[in-house]
Image (cartoon, rainbow, N blue to C red; front, side, top):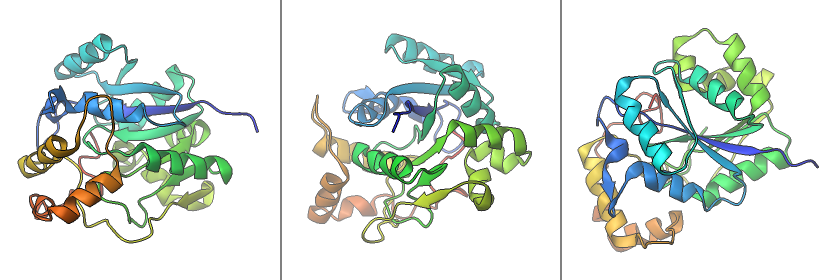
Length: 251
């Protein structure tokens, strides 16, 4: 089997509605966006990373940050995130795309690699782990082919689908060979994404307890911490989920 290049495209912007500029909030001495990319570097399946931000002036800071950290940056539409993904994928000759949202501070490279592995082994057009959800909210992973992305870009004219990138795939299951990776038990009640001040307090505390320079903590490390200190999970358990499972999906 010929190995296809796997590109993680990280969507990020500074103008998120519920918690503006959250991508630069400090965690363990570095901004959230730094940790998002740092965690991806532990994946054994991802070949390259791209930051996909908007052409809005407010996101000049993200392009500057990417330049300073030697990360390729593509800028596109703020509202039409599907077009932004397509532009980023096309400009980097992506063959297999991993969708990453920059408001998820605990993305797990082992989970990501499992979804990529399923995508490759089963010859899928689209693989995911959130329909139905079983992993903690914030560990969502979606993997799709460039061909599938191109078809969505050409066929979709629905604003909701264009804002949320992968909705065309979910809504047209007969057109894409797709499958869900389920966890052994339902942990989707756990909120591990960052949209509010309550989320930030919880995430910051987890980083204070688990983060070590040059190392990574994984899903099981967080679960063990929450078992020892259940109050941590309660810090943001009352936050209402946004319309899209997984947080500010249009980020």
